[in-house]
Image 1 (cartoon, rainbow, N blue to C red):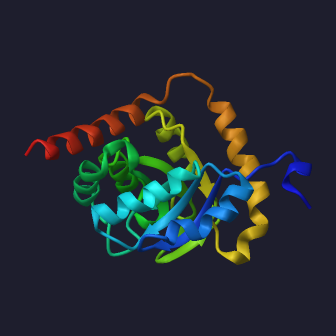
Image 2 (image 1 turned 90 degrees about the vertical axis):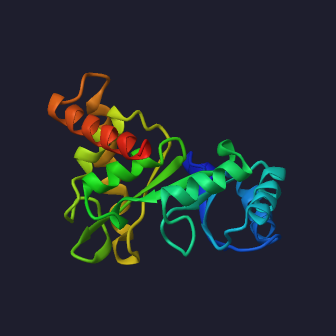
Amino acid sequence: MELEDLGLRIGQVRVGYLRRRGDAERFMALLDYLNVDSMVARPGINDANTLAELLDEASMYGVRVIWEFGVGDFLRSPGEVTELANEVSPHRLGLALHVARERGLRDFVRRFVELSGYVKAIYFSNKRGGFFGLPIFEGSIDFLKLMKVLQVLRYEENIILHYLPSYYGRYGVDLEVLNSFINSLGGGGADRRLVKSIERIVSEVLGQGQE
């Protein structure tokens, strides 16, 4: 069944590691056929020149590469991100964050603020203990509260539900609930206590950056 028949299109594809020149090109025929805007990849390199070459390969096809943060041996800290971004160009480096990889909601918000400007995709899945990949309403993370936070932080990039295979059937229902909640937020002011909490996190991050 063609996605077009359902009124759908693929806007982003998640691939594996990109390690060397030519790796991005391997996916380009498929990505070009699907007419995607961007692909999320795992960073397998820490060399600015090689990274720039991979970005050049992708840009030739009009595809943007977004790197997963904290999943490999590289791009595991804001310092590494800033260092590499300054070498290749800050406007060419985009990141994908996984909410469940942080210890809790506050830690995720802190990470988001630390990487502000680089985050182009956020993967939503919940966790219980050390078990990842649960549906967003079945774990320890309050995703409805997180949506309020992202509204205050004016995040307007991609959000992707990313469950374990056994929960694939939950995507439709959970997405409908999430969309309904997002629509209910409207443009009104957020809870003042929530705003104050976010302001404290921002101040802490900015304060550390000046030390």
